[in-house]
Image (cartoon, rainbow, N blue to C red):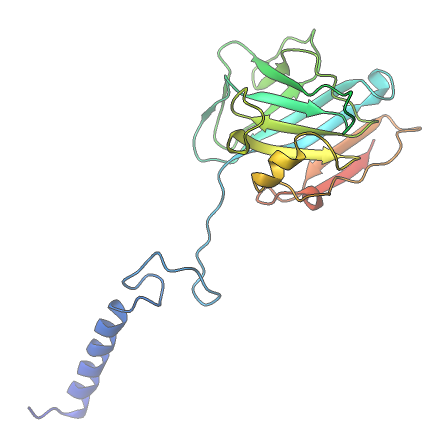
Length: 224
């Protein structure tokens, strides 16, 4: 078969495409499960619920206690029913400290957190939640001054890493739920948000600056 130059080039191009289609070394050609490379990245976002802000308003109480709030954001692309969710708190690593878990009380018919939405959890037993809010069901004594660790679980089995949705630890590195968070890939061993004294301030805010990241280095600390 005699081909002119244009026909030869067209045939060569077609053969090249066929070869690429059968190649298992390039993502998207024949084997979409190939591990990503710098040349052919595959980006996947871990869909989850996160703590994105903690507020300790200590002027409302003693230096250790006050009107404290936790903000939980839904990073998934679907609504999440939080009926069985619990907050688990531990103030430090002392053997005498009791690990406390608390289910959440929502405004009427408002246990769902919509995709992309944020719920505020009020650490006040006497508070009646409004739409978009919740409160703790029992006094777990969340406080600032001693440092602590706070875990979010989708079950009352608050020891299983598979049930942990997020974790934050401030002021100290030895809280009860830190190992669970490390196993869950949500925290790094021996790390915590660095805190400061609350003398002469009303309180503190701890906020995440990247909703796609985890760990103590993803948190900003400020006083007010």
